[in-house]
Image 1 (cartoon, one colour):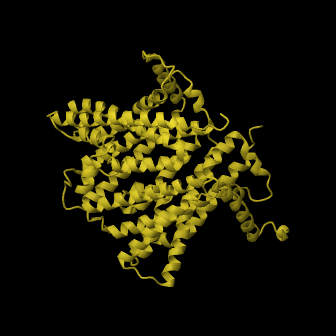
Image 2: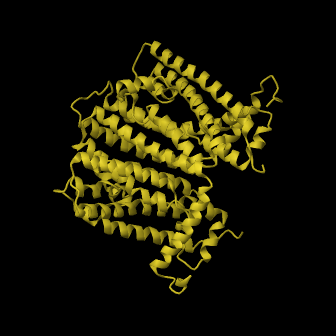
Image 3: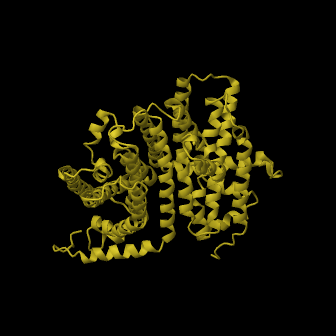
Length: 271
Length: 274
């Protein structure tokens, strides 16, 4: 390996990530049936969500001036924005087991960023099925809404999706990190994870208390609603939408700091 | 197991119930979070369907008012939280780790053993998470849930629903013997059960043909029938008896199906090392 010297560069980390990823995928390939069934499962979840939407709009023409295709847009957008947390950050779900059993200590002795090393260990392939379904739904909605396709709008979409994905990652980082302090972090994770299902609705359906909570405390409104306004309500985009990439980055950074702080005061179990 | 005595001694099974209640009670924080989750879900469902009904020109859609739909969906979710005891997960994990061998040599029928092991969890969840949610909904929508004979039938219907649900879980847990994919198998079961039972969207909203098909499947007996019994203000109990009869039919069918499938599958079990 030539890049031994520069252990802090992005390239070095990308290289490490590829190496770990390859190992993970090799071990996953031993369970091919599991891969197929898990992907079918995650697609089935989304097909059922899709059918539920469809049935709802068979009975009601619109929800607070949001049409069927606009709701589909939010749904597809939220699925894509929730893909990175599934694909790259799934190891957070194992954190509490490793911390309680003491296995976590082995991560602490590596000469690379602890958070990076821990998170890169698992690449959860079932996110691919979710991404494919989300992309399909978004394209379907995009076409039927008659939205234009220009390089600028594609660039906007990518930025919007990228910043939207940071929010759920940050929420789950903090939820997982609670295991450094409390023993019941599993239920905290499930509790927080379930909020993602409300991201697909326009926040205007809620009253002001819930709008405040979903914007500033558990910021799921940034997963689909705020970024989608650029495309769906271009004449009336609130300031929060433009700020969302920055809020996303700040929020992610805070979650990273919380995670690292927890890990740093971790003293192992003595085993 | 053939060593099982002909005469059934239920006491040994109730010992399991008692043990699992005690085990469950040591995880009190779980209930608080589940209950809190139910409350938030209750609010979200309220706002969502309020917005939906406000956007509609009619107050009654498919024979359901806003409060009917609200009660139906919140209680469906509360029922889900108490019915989902992760039978599939625990069965599949026991198969993977080999712990199942220890359970198989016990002088009990494995399906009954599993059922009674989980019965304590069902009972604790019923009283600690389902009941408070039910009471909140009852007071929140005071007068909308009729208090009378329907409550008696609802409880009876709930027990039958629980048995059907358990048999489906047991069946899916058995499938894990073959698939070795716990997450994927379980999530598919959850999706199918929740959608086709009317827990996500009341069956009354389904398009005609889809509803006709779904009504012939066992899933609607888990959520749709009990909740329809509860929310209907019928004074004539013949409708209730009909619903209970349908449920009873599915209880018998599912018990036979799951027991037969288990009997057939147990022959193929391979436990690594044990």
